[in-house]
Length: 328
Image (cartoon, rainbow, N blue to C red; front, top):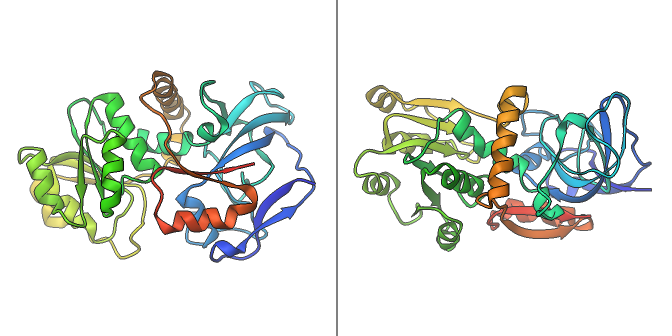
């Protein structure tokens, strides 16, 4: 029987269990994917810990991203057939579906072909990070010549945002608290890198932008650091919050917002994936970027399916630069 990862209670990485279960079968509007590679995401750690937007129902599947080959399709499915080489788009809830395993049943609308020049390891590393980063274009209006601040930039989404900036011609300003990662961010294409462990973010942004401040910030950290971002922002800048790596309360920077006319908005990938028109634009953008070679996933480390607990622990260590992938 296929090996599939489930967890029966919320907790640390040790709750993830590799279980032998009957091969799942696709229902109406679904497809069965023979999985070759699984991309890990911070959202899955939060889901496993019962700290995510959706709450698990036990025993729970887990996982948003996988690349593989379609083995079969359920009734009503068009546009997919057995043998298709696809990867999954996070356009479903982990309450109902998951990708961690040798097989995964997923909604057919959440499966899409990826460029032939990419391996399965790369193919499972594109949609979450690039569609998330595309939000800076769709909702932030990111364009050529704009100063674009990317915090926690060594994450897979942060690196994707650096590449998206290059694709549209914006000026990327990447931040990290880890001095060892600063060089890697420069190598990844960041125009400027700020080591916030030893440099003053506001001062450096002002120097880089000749006193104008950034036009758009893409931030997964939140917490009290939002006030620092407001101080580094330019007039009528936008601060996009797409995560909560800092669990402390995030105060609203009222006076900074009043002085500068700032816009601060929450954002998740589902704003794109749940809207057919936005989703079509985003997929086209990402596919064109991948085909051009400007968008190219950076893989931090790979693990085997049997090492899923170790893979989650590695993600929680924050040592990685890029995407963590589990091969099947």
